Image (cartoon, rainbow over all chains, first blue to last red; front, side, top):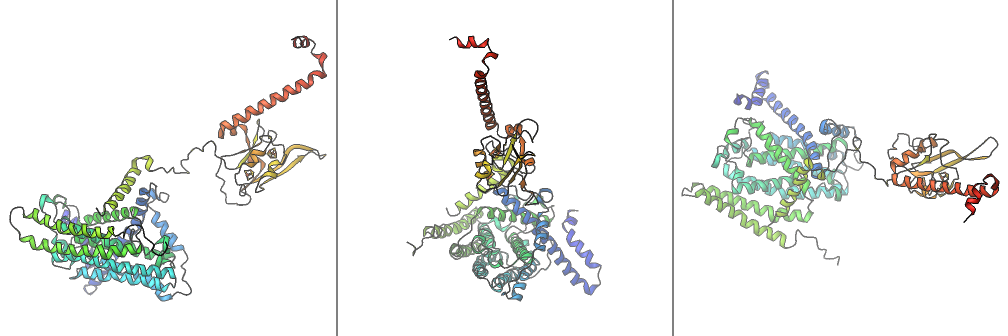
Length: 398
Length: 197
Ligand code: SF4
Ligand code: SF4
């Protein structure tokens, strides 16, 4: 019974595909997978905008949207209608084609990236051998969209925003990929379903063998999530939008549905990158303890995804925006060295896996934690002591 | 330790989030159209005209002296004096219009009125789809009973009423005193009693 429930979506897809003549079947299967992904994550986008507004409101001691439907749940529909009925303005000086293509290019690669994420047992649209590589490659295409939007609008704020965005996105791409590499090192594969399988089984006290429960995995997960926040340009790394400084940056000249597409793309990439983070560090669709294995795997994935979204909303409600120089310092002087250190810690963890003497597990932990904490202290001291995070001193003003 | 401040901030926002569900101090919103807060006693929005008794027309304290019309800084009061058929002024406004889209709630009209006829109201829900007619209040909209005045500004109304009563008593006493020397024979019994020291 639990088995069927777990495989419900896979079986449904197989049934539907079997209705078609054999030569069409691969196409139908691909189409069904794509449709399911677009529908699910489109719906999740709507839900998340509501969750975010509610959560931020509660953090700010407000009630949040509560007028449209019960608890304001129909608010996303109202927002969508508003966006659809707004005028779509294209500046006369803009490069029409680039301006038109940018929002589409922001959404489509992200949807492609979903195809390699395993949402449940056997529930992956495209089981690629190099799935992780595909994910990062396709995910980086959205950076082009951002620059196209900024360049094509022919507006100085757009261009400034786009340049900031490109600097940020490329800088944080490095720690993002490096922290993922440590998992690849341990799992020995680039295929995401195989990475989930590498975290199977239960270890100490019945806890699952997720990578996040190791010293390097914890550090890697935190680094990955920080880099993911920057990569999806969410607060506190929302400089590309910077509403109070550069009035929405590369999106200044967009209105109506194109603007909504940018938002859709941003949220979709947030979900996708959280999904990969879950797959790499949080055991993908696996249950945290053995006696919860009966819960369908896709539900576990959903719960973890919602948890990640909640944390992102919480962060957004808490952190102020960084300055551009702080952002770069943080990326190159903290995130990058730390992700390299994590890689070394992961390698050490891998090399010490053969230790068999008494208390070996504890010693591995101590070694791994020390390997991470000492550089952390040193790097953070280097960042904070030289006044890089303090108030800015203007050398020419006084 | 680097990052401790971030955790402290996260804890603070989490406390706000959780607190907003059970602690009224962390969710002070009153959902206005459904629930509303009582206006404070000294709230003031736009002026209204006070009338005594039951008839909003004849009970009006306003005598159309037009002092408020002249003093109103943005000139939003318009008064036409009532005259009878022979053109004799009637100490009563025929027209008393107040444009609340212009009024700036300065209360100067209230301060200058010698007859305590105009006072500040606390009603604020004047939104209307008709921005010309809907925001021009006429005499009938403005006239409100003294009872209402007691409701919205109890202290001030009591003070006004006491002053008016005292003034009236004084006027009556004066009238009596003036009436006395004119008709001494009508009160012969009283004269010796009051005259004897
Ligand atoms: S409200 Fe007062 S000041 Fe104004 S016209 Fe009437 S009596 Fe005169
Ligand atoms: S409150 Fe001020 S602006 Fe309004 S009617 Fe009175 S004097 Fe004029």
